[in-house]
Image 1: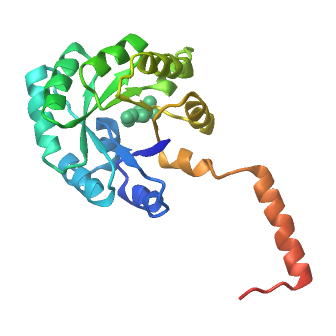
Image 2 (image 1 turned 90 degrees about the horizontal axis):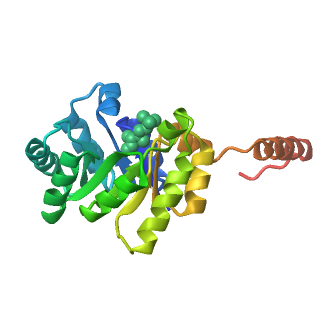
Length: 217
Ligand code: E4P
């Protein structure tokens, strides 16, 4: 399973990247706003840092304008994935940009039928938003399962990028189902390392090491 980091915070990406935890990055206009940076400048910086796909989202809503923005974003670096919303115009833009050989991440997916359309339009990634479905009392993981089944039934190559991940359990469930990629905030990725028994066991080992006068270097 690939790990993408869902942020435009360059130092946070760099910290995880140094550990080999970053297979790609996803951003969106809200994350760019949070970074306080210029979209083209911060995206270029992220692309220089990370080898894998870096999703940068268009803000136009009409297909021709989305295509123009997508081409401009794709010019930033070879590892840009143009992020397009799952609207009819977004699907039109997806087809055109995919046919040009650009990576496309179709975002804001909330149904399996939407995911089916994105795959047919040639999307490289489909981003179903788990957390936002959970927020309205729907089952985000059920959507991931449905898309996995449908894509496998027809051997679609579009990768399932489980997005809007809010907890470590979202990561675990996505891995169990077989999502190709998860994108999560840096804090969630770091939390994957935590376990109370690890902390407790380490505390005991350190106490015993001290009592025994163990020194290694
Ligand atoms: C994905 O690409 C989106 O940027 C992101 O996962 C949205 O997450 P949120 O619902 O927590 O804003």
